[in-house]
Image (cartoon, rainbow, N blue to C red; front, side, top):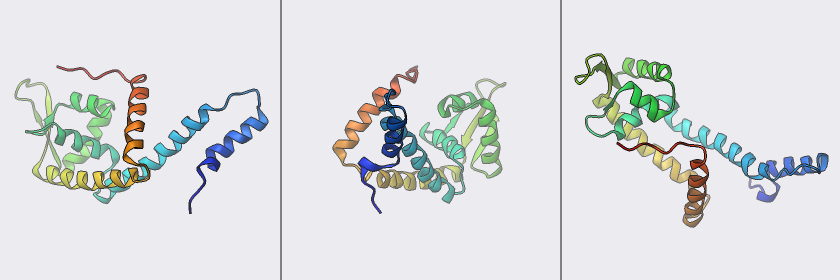
Length: 172
């Protein structure tokens, strides 16, 4: 079943608000409302893939971060927290679950004996490589509704808009 984009749920809500509050400019709902609905739908679609592999979204985030770190596929808990944008407590809980499953290890840092290092195990690497393949196929499927030119424009607009809310990453 397809819905006419000019008469989607957000358009109906906007019409109702214009009727009830003609003094308000409700035009931001056209963008924000649709982005919010799309973000929720996309999250559901992404999480479904992680769950097929027995991972939560947060666990996927941790092992993906370790994998993209490159050899030897390890980071400190602080680096993981910064990269995954969650608190150190949340990282600890995720890592505890992943350690219990044998997907990561936690050891004392060789550089700083007080610090810890979280590393991907061979089975963790095998799993994340399999999950990433499925994840990328899923993302391609999700973007199939828009053509390559629309994707490029959308990526540019979203990148510029997101930069107004995020601090640029530090290099070093």
